[in-house]
Image (spheres, rainbow, N blue to C red):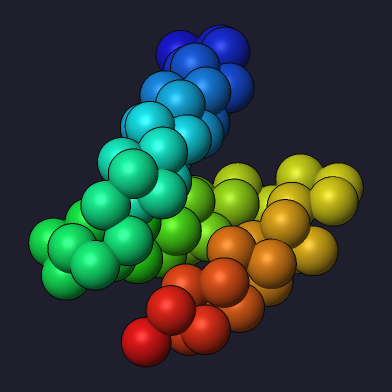
Length: 70
């Protein structure tokens, strides 16, 4: 439906923000690292598939952050 992609991106972004806050509060948590990594990967994949102007750069940033966590 029209607008669903924007809503999904908003939910993905909000989820990632919350997971990053949990990781910041628990930097030694392997589970928190895994959760943020998965979230970054999902955000990057979503943006890569959506392919709107600017999405490729954002997707690359999320993929790069994900790889840096490993």
